[in-house]
Length: 385
Image (cartoon, rainbow, N blue to C red):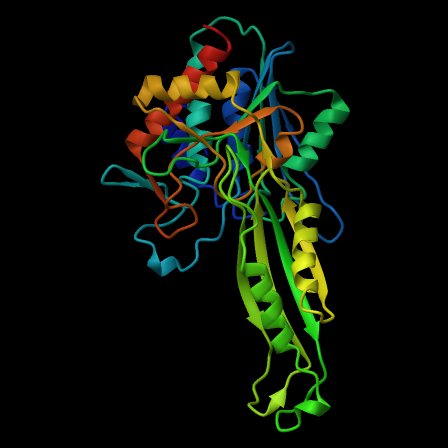
């Protein structure tokens, strides 16, 4: 697949959408990226990784320049499945333009950002004879999946090779109502818990001969929900605990079940580590005075890169192009920024997030062009053109 005009964010994004790169399939997207970056002078390395019984993932690391400062870009070409194909008004992998909108899987999450950045790079580098510093890109195929063979593995490889970034822009869709209204300078942490309460099965007419696990489970969940974790911090909303399932698996009306369980998720701010969240949870579960088993899976810790020169640079670029004063936020789910923040000052900025993962995912052509102009302005400001 070729792109006739790589300085066009629309053409690059359309070509990326036409690569059916549902996690963990590369789908030709990284091949396309190489074909666009190599003519700009980037040295490209493909980094396939696997781990245990997980699926194999292909990734791309590209670098231009050998000196500092180093401007990094982090993104993913993998996308979520399309869902019901019949519900789409267009082919989700055609990159169709309808009424001023580019529709397709990945249009906003996040092939549109990658297309906008590549087009911005093409224009930026084409306007100068040399670069006082370096630019590198981490493009993974494992952000929408398990996330174990993608960005985190590339970062480990970079550390082994002495590769670095001073700042890194992650192109996730961060805007809410208008392009440019939010820049994310951190993310909440996330832990998924599974709570099991075991009892003794018996007849409902003879409760003294059984031990009902549902009653203490209800008390435990009440203890978790009756008071909030906190009221928020300067840059974070309040931490949130959300029940996702309550399961007994009992189809009979006259049987006391042997086990009851519940799943819940905690999105926590910078007042907590995941260990502190678990301690908070266990203290409230133990109040019920009933034995239980609790297992937790941490998706990421909360983090923040405090406002500073990098977020100021993004804010100025947004203001110059859109006239909007961006808010610095930390809302939303986890992203690969949680890994990158250990290596560089990181911030996230991209398209509107309201159609991400939905049927007929789309961005407007104006938003895509404006985003590319914002990215170009950032490059010019960072390298002081």
